[in-house]
Length: 538
Ligand code: HEM
Ligand SMILES: Nc1nc2c(c(=O)[nH]1)N[C@H]1C(S)=C(S)[C@@H](COP(=O)(O)O)O[C@H]1N2
Ligand SMILES: [Mo]
Image 1: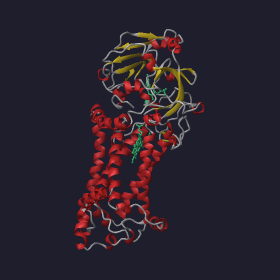
Image 2: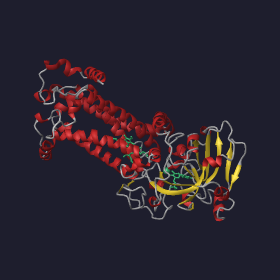
Image 3: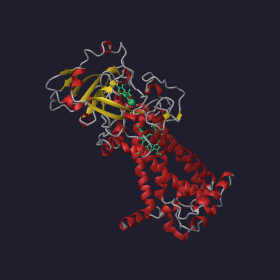
Image 4: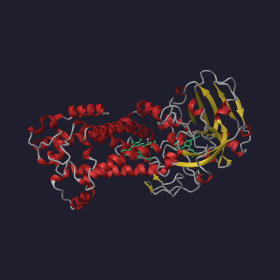
């Protein structure tokens, strides 16, 4: 421990040598040097991590807004019933009849300069958010380790209870747009210190913890985790409020840098020490850097849109190892957790049932009350079989009350009745090269990425998902045969992933060798056309 501390001290000394080396040689302003907590200065690591943090927070806010815009409503309950949101960012009113209005109908289209990447591209917004989260947390960890390793924590952690009355005292000073005396910045005054400590030690961890609560893999495996925040939707609301706090903070903080003793702030941040004579140069450098960061944020949007597929592949390549490390292994264990009374009275939908033009076959079966419906099971197998709904109902039944999470943001709890996918697959023998299971719908995609005619909705599942305990083919929802909008007569449920993998209006399932030879090669309709994670296990 002592060794690490010494090591870090050395790195710190090496990284911010100005003040240490020159020490007292320089006659520095008294308020910087003569502080109760010693000379904290502005070491290089602090300035660098702070700058990186600024870049990443902007990326997180912009991509977060893209994600939010795909379901612009926030709730404190998991049912997400129409009118139960505490805030919405759309004028659309949700009809109370289930199945009339799709989550996709509710999406906003934001301009490219505003959100990342803008233009209803939640698939890419989620990729940007995911990749940046990881980098942001690594940067934050380096910052916090160095903060405590070098004694710099005194900047942020108040060492006396006096900080509260002091902060109260300086509040009216700020409010009357005056400034506390320069001596009280050591390096920060009490109010600033409290605000910074709150952002670093309360809001940032809250963003991480509530972010984790939004992953269907995490709350599928550990449903209690979401309860720590109330429920999954309140975690989402808190995550949003955290963003709002960040936005307000950034505005205040940046304004104060330029209002409260800018000579100190600017030269300290740019040069690492107080150099009033170089204030003009510092200001130019700082403003140029801010402009460059804003240009980078905009570039991300335009670069993303220039070649959507390339962006999807690049970001997915960066994100996949992180997913593999943390969430891909989590398998749903929701049975027994949710109770009958948790079932949502209203359940959102995504993906309308096929029209007679799209699928005359499905329409005929529907008119015939599903008499004659057969699920085809085959592909790379020893034989192809066809199962009627009665065949499926005669097999061992599995029921589960689970929470559905659409990657757009809504959730809903329902009781699903069906048969395990693994039991169905046990009826045929897959060949050696059967690596993925492809499930195809009678229904079509809601849109195609390149505007070509709508193709049947499909998804490819890796074996890990196929053989999960709670992966079922469901024919019942809440003790009744599946309603039309929820996938009649048969649909997939995979409870550890996002809703878009759960094909409704199931037509056939087949073992295939590789998802890359199907559709556009990304692993499913929402991957092909919605630019979601390629061949995702979550
Ligand atoms: C300053 C930091 C951050 C800001 C401003 C931010 C902002 C946002 C916003 C506004 C959303 C949209 C919420 C919604 O409508 O569903 C969002 C989504 C999300 N955020 Fe963050 N976030 C931050 C950090 C994090 C961190 C550290 C994590 C993970 C550990 C995280 C994980 C997530 C996840 C998983 C989602 C939902 C994404 C999805 O379902 O695809 N966020 N974030
Ligand atoms: N055939 C088909 N299945 C589909 C879709 C679709 O558009 N067509 N949408 C998917 C998405 S994005 C989600 S969130 C869920 C929604 O299921 P629900 O309508 O039962 O809530 O269905 C999935 N299955
Ligand atoms: Mo979805």
